[in-house]
Image (cartoon, rainbow, N blue to C red; front, side, top):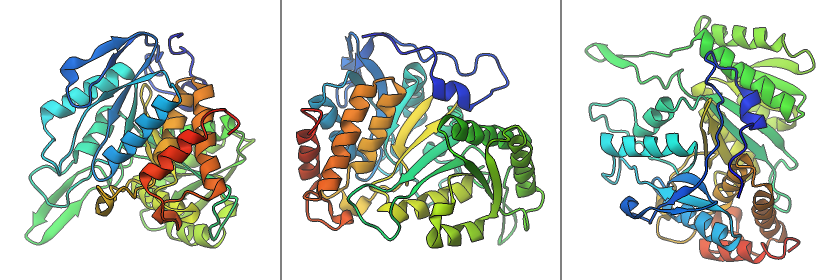
Length: 385
């Protein structure tokens, strides 16, 4: 198989980085095959694309099993290098974090489950998930919220994209007790990163043929912080006269999404707002189990669920919905220029949902995760069903 294309149209177009090394080639050749838990047994497999897999917590390992089963049935030329990083299962350490980072930096592409963040403070404010994203500079989180044909919700035929800056804002991990009983949490907003995410959003809209970008903010209250973010969005918008630009205060945006989500196309926003809106919008089309997501830096692409939930109460019960992870895996294959396999898997998942005979509990059915996987595999070959 040919190596990865050196000109990824999406990633090259979506970001303008300050250094000339940004958006360098994702070209790779042979890969190392990871045994499920013994990385020392990696064996090179000629012609396959190397992808780092991080199952995460909760139902993550079960969802990754679904991905591997479907990939195997579809003969997808991908070899997963599996790593385990978990704060709740005592599988998190600096050494493990560096192993994951090394794999992701080498492969450039990863698929990950939710790495659960405990609420207890144990001396470190930044979670391993946050540190991973910062070290890779995964600044742009993209969640495509789209209705699934055949699955009726309150709002149907939805198609909107949420773009979230995820390296600063409220998630900067800068908190301290300034006086007894008084905690200060710092929200960091910079011109450089605000301009970067705004340009990403407008480039995304341009490349995807979308008409409008809405900047979501709270500049009426946080006049300097969100004010700077809004100003940067307005400045970038002037460079894209063919894209309609609107602004909306975050609380009004939440209400408008519930009342009339059809008015939105591409939304761009700071970190915390994006986290909230991702989940709200996922609920409009069926919940966390059906919405894929992805995160980008200048060099790396990470594919994941759009609404990040470990769904711990479903662990081991064979009831988790693999739709979001399978669609995310399909998007990953498209990123790797494996269009045929990407379309095959996405179409199979959508056919299963459209037919409606096999649905997991979160979609109102009684099917198991295994039932869903078998049904998807059954729709892979022939390509037409």
